[in-house]
Length: 114
Image 1 (cartoon, rainbow, N blue to C red):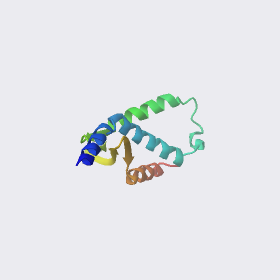
Image 2: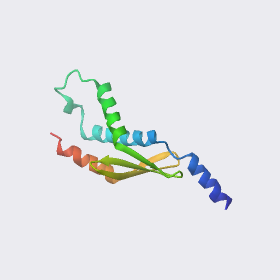
Image 3: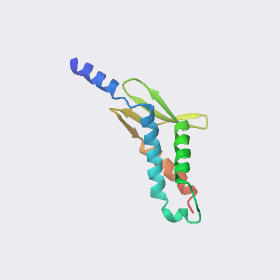
Image 4: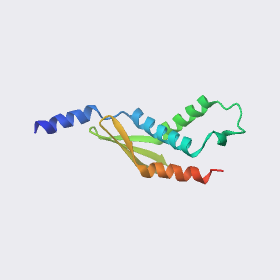
């Protein structure tokens, strides 16, 4: 019984905050983009302000990510159109995103790949 209580307390205090969920989604999307596009895809774009682009991307992710906090764990959701789609789970101070989410991002990027 004490083990369950201690485990519950540990889960409560290690539930990741919303910013961790946003960072996990942003980092995942950024990683996928860098895998799908090499630097040659940016040829012809001059004087691009990478800081501005990253700031816009982070703000977009922050606007789309919704965190449902259940005290002992949390669920990462993405607001897409009129739906909230669950894409990950936060527990033990970490956020785990579904591989289906990553594959969907890859599929969407490939539609626009030259």
